[in-house]
Length: 117
Image (cartoon, rainbow, N blue to C red; front, side, top):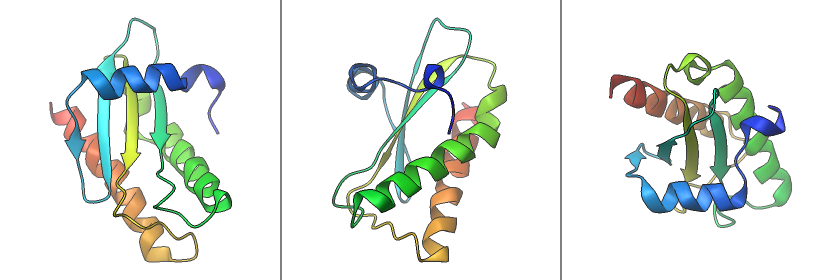
């Protein structure tokens, strides 16, 4: 997990989702909004329809924050608030390796899309 200062509160997540235009991948949607802080902040929204239990939802949240910690976003030169939303149609299962790899691939795809902008 990343420290609390790098995470967004519920109020800030709603602000980012309301204001900015999204980027899409197969299973995720990325919204971001520039911030005035000296670091990036992240959040992920996982719909209850996408997972079977809170154990799996927390598994994917932890996996997301581990990927973000090691990913390209850590050296992004503009500071932003990033909100990832798992699509409702996307079913996540922690026992399925293909599902986990697709989840990871979507995160990297969206990060490359942001860097190209």
